[in-house]
Amino acid sequence: SSVTLWRSTTGPGGPWTPVAANVPNNGRYQWLLPDDVPDSTDAYLRYGVSSETSSASAITPAAFTIARLLPPLALHVHSIRLAARSGYHAVALVEIRDEAGNPVGGATVAAALTPPVGPTRHQQRRTGAGGTTRFIWSSTGGGTWTACVENVTKPGYIYDPAQNRETCDSIVYPP
Image (cartoon, rainbow, N blue to C red):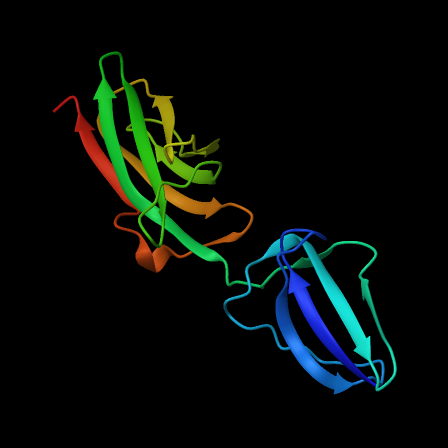
């Protein structure tokens, strides 16, 4: 007897696409997934077994998942905009994007914030849907304010500092 296999990536009702035709009915078939098969959490196989005198078919009893392991996307610092306010307060707006230039929401940005007077502060903030986050810090005097991104993390992404447009920004306030 021989086996013919079909796949569905949209559930047990099909549509069905051929996988292999008339392969030996030995209980094994190694399927190398073609590039045009989409990822799916609702995939099924249909088996058709035929011999010279009879035939039968069946569908897998439950769905299986087709998921390719893609390399993680890289993310980077797209911009840091630093502004000072009266009363010796500074604001750093940090924008995170992926390698395609899309804003990355939900990324954790770790920054070192150095005021003109006092120690450097290390803070973490999460980016919003637009890929930006804001750090605010203060000082008891004026001079040079500096904000430097130390790290960016998000599951499924890797931080690639080589893609950063900037890593630090400084401003002198009051001028």
